[in-house]
Amino acid sequence: MDKIIHSSSKKPFFISGSNTSVEVWSDQRIPFEPKGWLKDLRTAIQDKIKSLSPHNSNFLYSKFVSSTRDTVDLDNVLFYNIGYSNFSHLPLNRIIMERSFVNPIPDPNNIQFPHYHLYSLEKNDLQIKSKKEVGKFTSIPISNLNSQKVDGIWYAIKKGNISTTNSDLYRKKFGIKITISSPNLRLTTDVGMKRVIDGVIASFQAQNGYDDETSKRLALNLGINKNQANDMISDDTNAILGKDNLLSAYRNGIKWNPADDLLVSVDLNLKQRFDNLSTINGQIYSVE
Image (cartoon, rainbow, N blue to C red; front, side, top):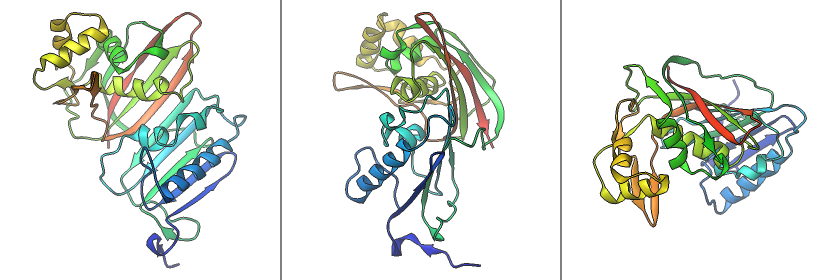
């Protein structure tokens, strides 16, 4: 067997790509505002992503692999920290994101790196298999989805049809499947992905404790009264992801804290509508 070389003795990253896939091996994850060689790595990834051919597929499979147990927002590490605009040339109607807690495969030079990213227009299905569905949801119709923050998306789901089994996913791995039916929306935008994912996850949580200022700000954002806002955020009927500090006052607004660090699978689908309304529906499931 060939000897595996540790990455510390070589360049801190390796990247390869074609018009159908991009593979990245690195010593560190890319943060939101990278510096030094991490900034160089992000630029290299962006260039490779832009070389993906929009004619090959309307589907993108993405994966992050690392044996570390760091708290990771899956959408952040795969898309947000790279920059949504770099994917905008791809006319995508389905995106899969997955995370694996194992050592990545070595790079083509047989060097072992602790982190690995994959973006592929060729893979076309989930690699992580669900254990069982534990909840489902359908939002009320949403107007102007492009302008909605997490507040509005969460509210539309909570006011819609949401149900769960007796399962408890608190501090357990889970996955979500989301279908967005909307006019004039692209998946690789802030509202198309991140806010929708955060709003869905938050819908299966509840606020632990009461904070008057937070409830007041949430109520103002949603155009409802403070007591109604507090009742909704505290409602633990379907809080299978637990009760925590879900929402807090932050600067002049509010900050959401969705329980996404054990989210290991996202199947995000887009269906075009021809009116001015949008809906969001899907399932949440446990993972082996």
